[in-house]
Image (cartoon, rainbow, N blue to C red; front, top):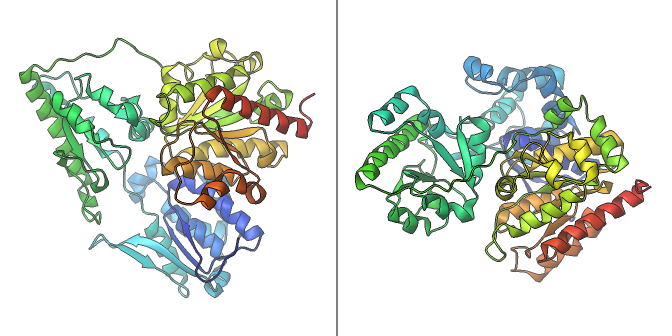
Length: 515
């Protein structure tokens, strides 16, 4: 990579997902790769501080090792400090005592480092830098990392007051169902949120006639939603200006999020709209037909869970080395109308599981896997090969659901920990990333995230980047020399799965695990 004065580095936020970024920055520092301009927000600002001060592994140590030691995330901090993070620990004890920050190197760095904060008076973004005052530098990164409390609509709708109001209007209560990753995000944070479908099949959910209010946020919203909603008198509310729908009611943060302090009021207004619409639809006699189908799924898997379940990660590594587990695949991605709906995801997963591959999943790809029973406790007895079946011990599913679409770092964290435990570079492990039906920029980003680790990505649809032949060619084979990974595309899901299996067996052969 050629870096000049016109090359900048952008570090994204995302809470604990910033662990991935910290690993990339450690690699940059290892190779003495520094940018003249760096801009960062939230978790990216924290990582950027350690990058500019040239302290490899500092961010990783803070985010992983010290989290388990000090447990600095939790509701008790929300009560005592107004934030779910222990800010006193993170922005005082850590930089000044426990993992001392090198202010001298930071201040003398030739790089310009800007952190994005929000002006509380105007709601506008403020780009701040500090190269002299230690406390002001810490205050800026603290301000950049401030987090709003999420999923207020669900929280508000579960309040005793509004549930009582719903019952007074003839309902049995208030029930939340979810589409796409908004559903998974809420499900992981609150009880009582039931995921129903990914974005492409959202219209089918409304067509049951059971939905009084349909809320659309920023992502994966299809314009035909309004046509279907009007047929069933379902109220549609949009909460983001990026996803406005014709004739939908807009109840949203303004362009600059200057009304973020009104989150509770906004959430309450939306729930009240739902109660109101329920009464109207009852008076209209709207017919409801819900298919008599119900599935169960185990969700919430993580590195921490595996460590507790197996009393350490050792049994997992042993299962991989012995061949009980052929390899591990992270399966994600949205759906794509260019291929049969959900068919590619199911076919690839089925082939992998019966060949003893442990599958991790998140986001929209998880919906067909849940519907087909792959995420159900004990499903390994039905779908898995003999080795994987033995490892699952009869009660673990062959597909481990780790979260929403932005939770790929949970999968990469599991993979990285196993590789480190075995003393093998992650790029040499029998790992794969697959997004069979990918259709948008998030899927490309996720694939590139694993490609940067040296893990191949596998797809049934060509990448959604056609503007430049050079870019398209680089994303496939051109990255192999630099990243140690490539993109494999095969429209036949069975053949794609076979390619994954063949590549895993080749990796195992190189490691001497094919005996």
